[in-house]
Amino acid sequence: MRAVTDDDAAAAAAAAAEEAARETRTAGPASMPGIPLEEIVQAVVGASQRVLGEDWEARLATMISALRHRLAGDYAVDEFGFDPQITEILTSAVEPLAETWFRLEVRGAENIPAEGGALLVANHSGTVPIDGIITGYAVKKYGGRDLRPLGADLVFALPFIGQMARKVGATLACTEDAERLLASGEVAGVWPEGFKGIGKPFAERYKLQRFGRGGFVSSAMRAQVPIVPVSIVGAEEIYPLIGNVPSLARLLGLPYLPVTPFFPLLGPLGLVPLPSKWIIEFGEPIRTDAYEPDQADDPMLLFNVTDQVRETIQQTLYALLVDRGSPFF
Image (cartoon, rainbow, N blue to C red; front, top):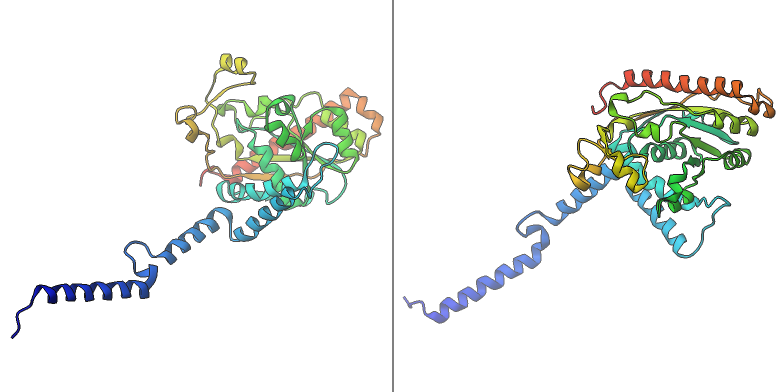
C-alpha cells in the first residue's frame, strides 16, 4: 500500500474545499448559518402588517404617490392654507397609531354630516393635544370629511408646528374665521376647554372644565349649521399629568410644563404615549337653524345652548368610561 504523501493530502484538502464551495453556491442563502433569508423577510412583512395594518402596502403606495405629486409641484392650497394632500399623508401616517396602538373605536360617525357645514365640539385632554389629531383622523376615515380645527394663538406662534397646522386645515379660533369656514360648508372642530382641559391634573380626568362664553355657539348660529357634540375617552391616560413647573413654563412662554410618571425622568422615551383604549363618540347634532342668526347676540341663549352641549358631552363621557372598563386591557 502506498503511503500518503503531502501532495496527496493537499490534493484531498483542495477537493474538499471545492465541494464545500459548490454546495454553498447551490444551496444559496437559506443554507447559510443563522436565520434563513426568507424567514427574515417574513418577519419584516409580518411586523409591517401588525404595525401598519393588513393594507400596509396600499397605504405606503398612497403616501409615495402623494409625495411624488408634491415634488412635481402638483398640489394646491385654499385661502386658509389647507393642503388636502398633506391631510391624506397624515391620515395614512396616523392610522397605525389610532387603530393599533390606541385600538380606536368610533361611534356615531353617521352623525357627521355628509355635506354642508357643521361644528364639532369636543372635550380636550391628554397633556399633549393628540386628541385633536386622532379626532381629525376619525372624521376623515369614518366620516369622509376633512376636519378644520380652530386652534389657539400659541399653536400658530410655534415654529414648524404653526405651518403644519395651517396645512392640515387648522385656522385661528376667532369668530370671523369660524363663520367663514362654516358658511362655506366646511366641518370645523373646536375644543372649548382649551389649555385648561389638556393641562388639568390626572386626578381630575374626564371632568370638563369651563366652555367659555359660548363663542362657538354664536358662530354656528350665524352660519345656521348643526353642532355635533364629540366625546373622547382614552386621551386622559396617554400622559398622566402629575405635576407642573409653572416658573419654567412662564420662562418658555408655555401655558404649563408637564411632569408625568415617565417624563422628564426617562427623557425622550417618556414622550411615547401609553397605549390606552380610545373611544370617540359623535353625538346627535344639535340644530341651530331653529334660531334666527341675530339671536346669536343673546347671551342667555348662548349660555343655555353651551350648557346643553357641555352636559351632553359630560354625560356621554361617563357612559363611555363604564363601557370601556380598564383603559389598558
